[in-house]
Length: 239
Ligand SMILES: [Zn+2]
Image (tube, rainbow, N blue to C red):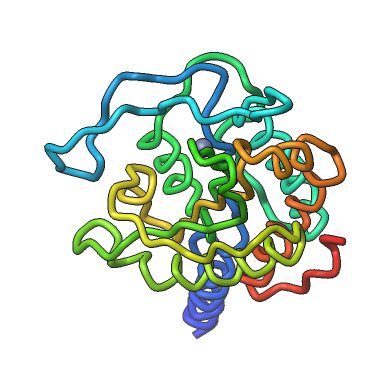
């Protein structure tokens, strides 16, 4: 009887423990896009796909400041990490330095999958041959059976929430949301995933602003607030 009671107690304790340790309950994976060098090797755009894309074209750079996108992405991501940690979130980074060749997007998705991320937040800035193009937009995976059907709804919801907070924080034009079927890092992700293009480094105004610590902080605050709202947490800690 006692043994049975203990057995039941242990069973209940295990149930509670497994509920608390639900996959990705409070783990966020931050992915500062690109790295010091492009990686022109190719990889399949999704599991089992015969369509391949280069691993990493290398990103853009500031048209006025010359700041490489990889550096901006990392500066913002490190600030987001600091803010999320203050909120008690466990943060995993796909990279913490800008040095060497990009690992590519399958590898980045695998880091997020391995961490069981509640959100895989990919941080980028955009570039265009049209230097008048400006504003913030957020991308999320298009629905593809077997690849993204398990993360589509949660990703779309997260994209809308984070986009709204990022636009509010930066004050750049709202370019809205965009579904993408051709992003390797989306198609390989088994966890909710979004990619925020915080602004356009090819637009002189946004380049100058994004190169400042003040705007990198704004970008991080918006991403922190958006992420915590996605997780159903209080956002005041973000500032
Ligand atoms: Zn990029």
